[in-house]
Image 1 (tube, rainbow, N blue to C red):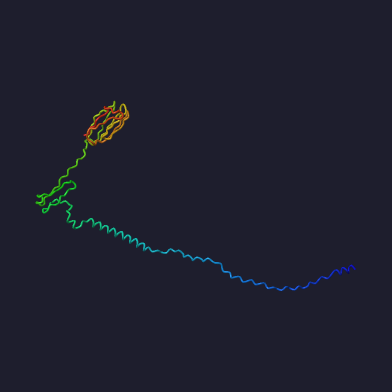
Image 2: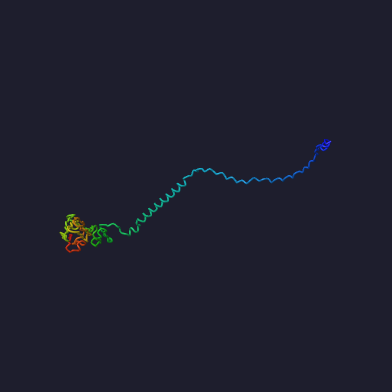
Length: 244
């Protein structure tokens, strides 16, 4: 019995019932998108023309140079003729002014103006006698010669002096005009200085030395020399130089 009950409890599987398909609703059609415009493009630059070395003509350059040179030459030529014409005296003024050359023959009709020699500054003035005698030669005066410098009989002279006990020995000297004089001084017992102001001589001679001074006697007269600094202006340390 239990089995029957179990069999009753077991039911047969239910058969699936067909479910009707739901109605298909058509999906709304999306609107057509606006036509997409192409993205803006930068305009491509114009192709560069290849740089080529164009042959340039030098004719214009040569014409400029030729024109400038021609202008300069023309200006130089005009300047030369202008300067030459300015230097040449005019015909009217040439007839009015006397000739610059000095004529040695005096004319008979009219007397010439006074003429002066530049070298001797002598003036020649025509006289009545010279005007009446045609062809008389006028001799210019002889210029006075300039005095020349005296030439000594001996071009050079050497004099020895010993300085001792505040005295120069010898202390009386002589020389010719324009003669070169060399004075050798020996300082025996101390330092001595030797000065001739008119000839610009001033030198100190240390004790025990032998040295010299040299000058040209360009002036005539009697000139004093002395020992001033080292001798304390001792009157015995003096002497004279006679130039004649």
